[in-house]
Image (tube, rainbow, N blue to C red; front, side, top):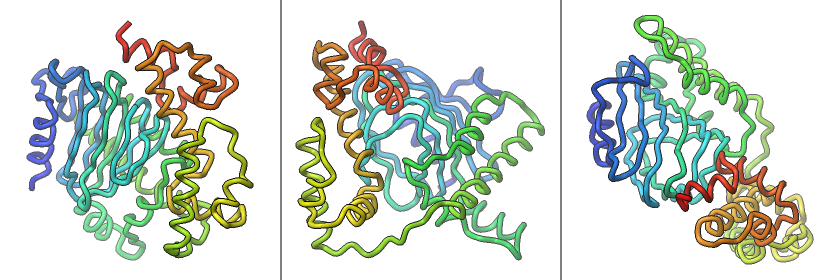
Length: 319
């Protein structure tokens, strides 16, 4: 399917309508979310089926399940604000994070929480770019960036990519200068990801046996039931029948995050529920999900969602 037709169908099905007066940026096209569904916009700039640049700033009135069959591409996105869960694989959508997605294999499925803005900037690079264009222009040095994109993990520290995507969001040029700017930023993004993979501290991902997976799932179940308590490493090692080093590496291999990060994800998910469905104070919620300090909880909550707990409550409850 032609990329323009894909975006048109996908956005229309999600409740967006194209805006004739493009007041966000003269380049590309702006789509506005219908008032029945929510509020905000989705801006997209495409270049000759080589790549697209997307900037989102919208929210839904209700919790919304979305399923999008993304065409074959390599995608990288910086989330400034978001609240929800990606479903395949299941993982919490985190603000202040860089995420990659490989399109063309499984659909992107997510549950987006109501009223919390999805503010993000991303690049989708199509096969015509990373298989044909790069190979043609760099015949002696060509390297398919597929594996490099796939190696980026949600918890990776990637300030260079955050800076690049922030520059794209703030840019308001037009004409040939804008085309040259976007071309250069896409090439820079690919370069950063390939370099990031080269410089990344790698550990060997050994094959996980079925018995190790079962033991790790027992550890996961224990964490799910006790995330609000002070879980000691020794307890988890005993449940897993593994040494501390093996447990840490295999847990990250299975879940794509560290044990500490997994516990924080569970705590933040429960905190969102308590903020939206109870009248507990921020201090009570902090203690309920496992933090003795409300200020520490607030810092971590903002890092996770992009907004403070009291702001989240005001938005979700509309008070």
